[in-house]
Image: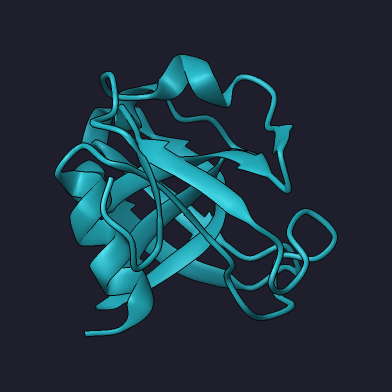
Length: 126
C-alpha cells in the first residue's frame, strides 16, 4: 500500500490530513512537496476544477475533476497538463483539497462531506 492509498483510507474514515505530494503533474496549482490539506468530500457537490484525492483504475491520484457525470454518479479525473486519467465513481473519490501551503482553495470547504475527525499530518495520528 502506497502513501496515497493510506491517506485515502484515513480520509474515508473521516479524517482531514495534511501531506506533501511529489511530482509535477499538477503544477502550477500544486508544486512538488508543497503542503496540502485534504478533507472528506461529498462527491455529489464536485465541479470541474476541484482538486480531489481519488482512485482511478487502481491508482490513487491527487488530481483535478475535469468533468462531471451526475446521472451516473461519476467524475473524470485529469492532471493539470492535459492527461486524462479516466472516469471514477463517487465511491472512489475520497477527499477534496482544501488548501495548498495554507492558501485556501475557493469553494472547497463547502464540499466537505462532514465535520472531520481532526487534522493530522501524514504519519501522525489526529
